Image (cartoon, rainbow over all chains, first blue to last red; front, side):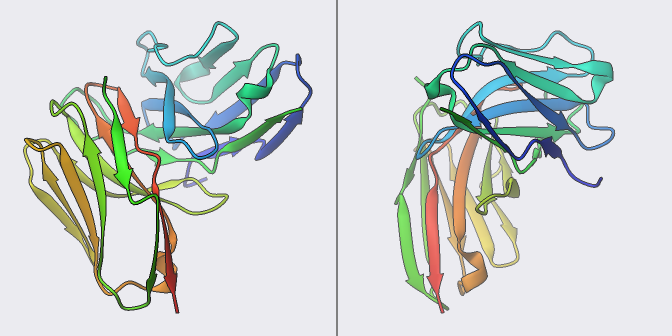
Length: 117
Length: 111
């Protein structure tokens, strides 16, 4: 597709279950970001992948959160033992930035709305 | 602490009116600043990006300004239309990948 694709669009889960959220970035984009948007709040940075470099995990809120990016393309955000405060919209973005001084136009997916009951 | 604040939280205007959305940031050592639009149930769309060395950017009816010294940016929308109704987010990038978002301004343009 032409844009960033995220699946599922909605996910309802029970507290304590594990969930996986998927992101397909724009083809050729080397940078991929995960954000979380809680109700009434701004976006919160979670993790950043750039090419084959080690990801920047500084935004992950706890060790229950992890993310992978296989083959430099598709990424999966995993939340283990979900809790109610994990309920939010999880947004993925990709960009073609190639270096520190490059413009960083991020293209966002529609997000996955996670509800933890 | 690097914070991004957007005022107002919500704004309702009649069609045709010019309007200004405000964004302020506490740390002026920014890398760039972006304005995004978010429609319900959809992802964010980048509207304008201003590099730290620039003062403003324009795209159609949109004009974004940046004043690093005062820690402020404004998004000016001319001749507003009902289709402009959305949430507008300001995002400040501080280094290679640290991007902080404001909570957004929810704009409603009434026909």
